[in-house]
Length: 626
Image 1 (spheres, rainbow, N blue to C red):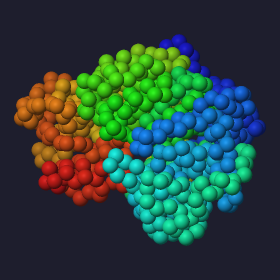
Image 2: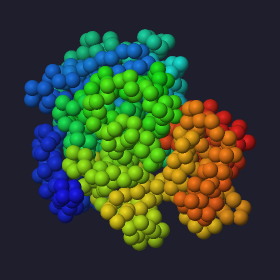
Image 3: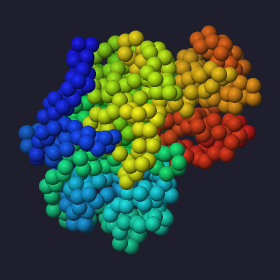
C-alpha cells in the first residue's frame, strides 16, 4: 500500500497541501490560496477564496485544449432504439444555448431550478446549463408522484421547472405533464416558468398547458451565454434524500469542493482519464447519476455513456453486454441489484457470449452491499476485477474504495476495501468508544469531511447537526454498521437499523444474507428482523430463486437453516424462509427492508414514494397476510 498510504497520510496530516495540490487539476477564475475554512465548525467550507465555474471545467476547457472533437456523451436508448453522440464542442453548444434559454427566462445565479426529466440528453444539458449561469439545480427522479415533487418544490422554491412529456419503461409510458400540473397545484409557491422537452413517443406537450414553454422552440431562438463566475462555496445543487420524519432532506453540494473531489476521483479511484469510455448505469435522479453520469467523467475529459433502459427486458439479459460492446466501454459502474437481475435471468451468462466485451477493464459496484456470491459470479463471468465501493448521497463520492488508478489492492469479497484519502473512518460502540479490529459497531467519519461532501441541508442547519453530527462529538454518523479488519479494510454490514437483537445477541442481517445468497438456487435475498415473543427478534429470510431453479421449498429451507447454523451459529435462530417472486425495491435498487419488516410484523406501513414497483409490495403483503 505504498502509494495509497502516502496519499492517505498526506490527506490526514497535511490537509492544506494535499487538497490545494488536488485543486491544481481544476481551472479556476481565482485560484484558492487555502483549502479549508473551519472557523464555523462543524460547518466547514472548502477553498473559501476560490472562484470557478463547474460547467466551464466540464466542457469549455476541454474544447479550449483542442479536444472539441472528442466524444463527450453517448446517449443509448434501448427504449426507442436510438443512439446519439455529442462531441465536447457539440455538448458545449447545447449547454451554452440552454443556459441562454434560462437567462432569457429570468434564471440568475443563486436561483433554484427543479429538473424532472427521464434519462435523455436534455437532463445532462439542463444540469450543466444551470451550473453555467450559477443557478442551483435540484434533480427529482422522473416519475416521482406529484405530492413528493410538490414537497421538493416548496422546500427549494425554484423559479423554473424543466421537464419532458414523459419517460419510458418496458411496456409502458409514464406521462410527466399531468404529474407536474398536479404538483404545481399542490405546491404553496409554484414557479411560473415550466419548460417541456416533447418526446414524440408520449402523448401531450407544452401546448396543452397555458404558459408552458417548448424546449425545442426556445433552443431554436436561443443565444449562447458564457460561464458565470461563482464562489467555490456557492451551492451547485440540492439533492433530496429520504428522511425519517417523512420530510425529505435537501443535501447541498458546493461548486469548488465538488469539482476538486470528482476530478481527483476519476483517475485515482476509477483509473479513468481523458479519452476513456465510462458508463454509469444509473439515473440522473440519484447521486450516482449526478457524480458519475454527468459531472465526474466530463470533468475528467472522458466519454460518458447515458443509457435509457433496464439490465434485463430491454430486450433481454444481454442488454449491458451489448452497450459495452457497441461503445467500447472501459469501465462500468452499476448497482449489485442490476448484476443479480442479470444473473437471475441468465445464470449461465449465455447472452454474454454474443458480444465482444474485451474493452471492459473493471466493473464497479455501489449503492448497496455487494454480497460475496454476486461478487464471485460477476468476477468469474466477466473475467475482470469486480470492485465494490461504498458511499452515500450525503458524501457524493466514495468513502471506501479500492483505488484502481492510485494503487490497486487485493480484493476481499464483502469489503469495499480501504478508506479513501480524506476520509478518516472509525468504528465506535454505543457510547462512542473506539472499537478494535473485527469488532462491529457504528461506522463514523472524523470531521471535517473531505471536499465534495455535503456542506449542510438546504435551509435546515439544525436538522443537519441532529441527523449527522450529534450522535458522536467530532464525528459524522454514517448510519451504517460494520467493522475494520486487521488490514484496515472496511466491512459494511448494513444500516444500523438492520442490526437485530436476538436474545441479547446483536446480529447483522447482512452477514446472514451473505450465507443465504451463497446457496446455488438463490438469485437474491433479504433478511429482516421480525418480532419474536421469546427472543425479542428473530431473523426471517425472503429469497428469489434463479431462473430454472427447481427445488422444493421445504428442502431449500432445511439447507439454508443448516448453512446459517454452520456459518454463523445456532445463536442466529434462523428458521424462517419464504420464497417470493421479487423483492420490493426503490428505483435506485435498495431493498425496502423496513417496509418488509412492518408487513411481516403486521404493522401499518406506507408505500414509499421511491418504490420501483408497488405491485411487488402488494404481492408480498398478500403472501404474508399483511
